[in-house]
Length: 334
Length: 202
Image 1 (cartoon, rainbow over the protein chains, first blue to last red):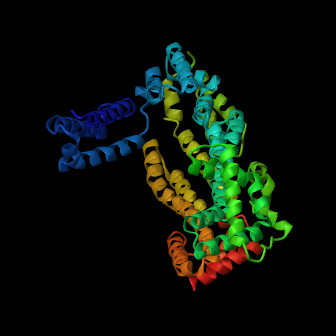
Image 2: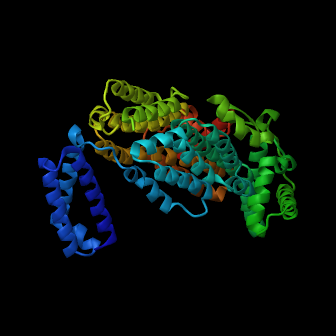
Image 3: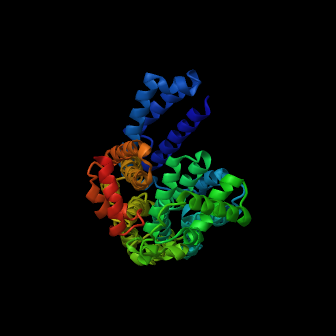
């Protein structure tokens, strides 16, 4: 029998057995459900591959009927006389499945699971198991440690790719997740930080697109063709950037955010290496290109000094300290 | 083993955990308190009575989902994301209406699909806003021979934006918070870009 069919049938079987304990084996709906389940098992033996099985009309109808019956059974009340304390194996089974799927290198998370399995061995039933898990705060620990372990090494990666927004995201997650005292709090911070990062990343992209990338693209075009059209675009791009950010080219290439991007992204993509020397050489080349394109033109007019400050989350964002701005502005708004 | 005592201890521990943040765990706190109250009425150690009183702890499962989606909605509200708020309200309403575990998870997976489309739509619109602002600037700096091509690109992005946000207008860019959160300029500088947008759309 195909593995997916086997898995699906075992899921149905598990559910039916649970309902047997809930409503009793003589319950009419349960008996009907068992009959359909047996019919599906026979079909699965006959139609061995998943494709044929799932496209069989009788199978589709049976599965729909069975699902509807399971929904009905879920709404039935527990028969008090039949109720037995769930076994520890039942309560722990989901953790075993999750553990098996966990990558081997997630050692910290795996060790939390291993503690769960120790508790499982020491527990007589599901109640003791869950109570011990709650006493040891395993539920929150499991979420927190898994979150943090997945983030390991990401901060350094974001720094090396010049993504300050993500640097802030990883720092904030590392700071807030261990302090969360409930799963809802942990999820709230994780979702909040991810929403902040989403907006800030787009903001950062708009900034780069309308400043350093705009200028460098124009320069690259001109260096390639030396045409008047491309020269004009370098001139226009420089005039635009100088006006919008209140900076000349020396000041522009010295803005820490822009310089970091040139060193780690632009220069690296051109020179295949991330080094300050090659980035400095590229910056000099860019400045020389601008000078050549502006030769004989009126000098650029810088925008007012106040234009060296942008707006992020409705608050002032000085260009010189954008790394700090990414770490503070959003939180002042919240 | 004293079943009632064991369960009482479990529920109390989880309740205390939730009480560390009353706002984010509002529904779970109510659910734990409700079960603890029911448990207090059981006078013997019979699991049948316990199971009858607390069932399969559906109220807790439902409360966890409500707290989860209400907190996500709270985040969307903080950012002024109206579409995101609407999307999460769809899920919250469905969770409220669920009356058992099977229905709860089925309804979440069904409504989440629709809600995710709305949320994704907002994200796409934000990405297009970045492209639009960039394109307006590129139009402004372009040489005469490339103006028409860049103008056409502005129109193309604008049309895509209209698909995601049918209420988009040039003024909305200035007013709508989620759009402003991805634009680094004050009104003075943004007005300049908007004037190039108007020119491009003519």
